[in-house]
Length: 128
Image (tube, rainbow, N blue to C red; front, top):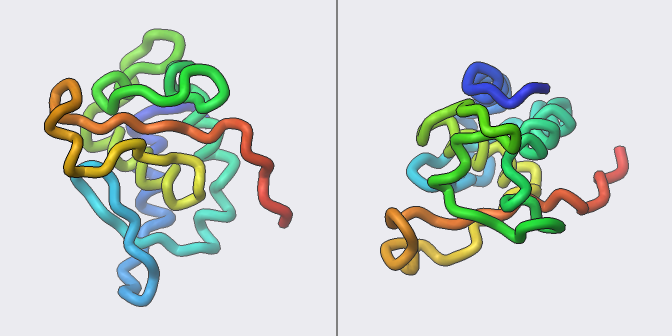
């Protein structure tokens, strides 16, 4: 699935849940609960969008980069803004592929006060 703001929003709408018994996933400014069955159904699509982020975000290549740089694809095209970047981080975190690298208390000391995050691009796909 191509990394676009529209595709990220579509997957958010399909996967988000209001069931308070589900774990809360925290992003940079937003938090959400997700339907596990929908995340599993869309995992490959989420992974493919995460793979379109610049190489610096990929664990095996760059090891993580600033949230501020995530609005561009690795091809240099702007795909989103802060809200949709945060939604992509939420989806990636929910499937175990995204890790925010520093505790929130350290964010003010980072460029723009924004966290760095990393995409685990080499983790084996879980068995189905």
